[in-house]
Length: 394
Image (cartoon, rainbow, N blue to C red):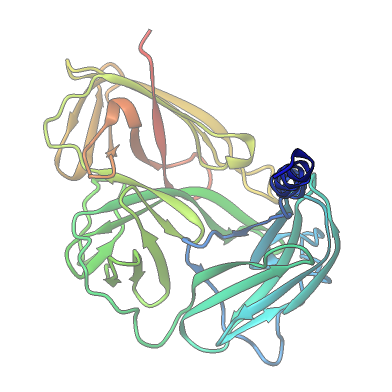
């Protein structure tokens, strides 16, 4: 074949190889489509307990509700919040409640004109239950040019009716968290004192709360226990008729609070370490400071500060501190006896050790929990406790 006839064939072959590469190059450099990011408060793993829908007085929409405090975004205006962000700017965002069987949810559909990358849009919801038991609440967010995303709350619960299914045992498990005890201290104001909330699963069927005096849970006179139902697969646990939570290996979740897993120290144990708790200003009205030094020789030092100031009555209550030192003894169920021979003072408290996910005590690394019975100079007595974190011994 003459050379003049080969050149077009070679050029054609080269073009057939180069052309696909040229066409593919822009696709390789193209940016990916925007992605939507969703999160809820409470989180999906934290059960949400809601009230019954009152048809005569349904909850006001969070978009128009103004709380009693005057803050329209206060907690009494909404039960669930959905946070939405995107990796690139998007417009015409639609938020839809796609699953809410047995639930009243307001709003059901929300539109967002534009979503920028440097802002997170919050959509808030009022939620009530029409029927008792467990329900699922699912949101879907979509926008042109993006893949729709869904996020759900699988454990929305209204008290009443049959208990949740599950007879798995939590016997011996113990959890604690800081809570608030509210009561009316004047005709116009409600007072809050921070208190220790402790849940102890006594056996395969009953759960109760520990006393600060000796840590022991008795299901008889003076202490009440409630039956519980636990499903190990989901982690759900129902205590009594009106409390639902979720248990993991390391913690439990009740009422939106995280409860730390604890274990009782063995009787006669001697610990050597320094642990401390200090509250922020917003966490006051209770035991606001604890500093505990235990030695393996059986000696201790304890300092704690108490804020018993009452809202609405500034002239009542006081902030004071106490210091003790002497010898200690750990008894059954975490009963901690503190003897200050110099001041002829003896105190009884409850000591628990923060545990690993497998239930092993790790006071030196994870800390301890110390409950104290407080008798303020004025006002009523109360029980408070805190998780004390370990500090280096100087």
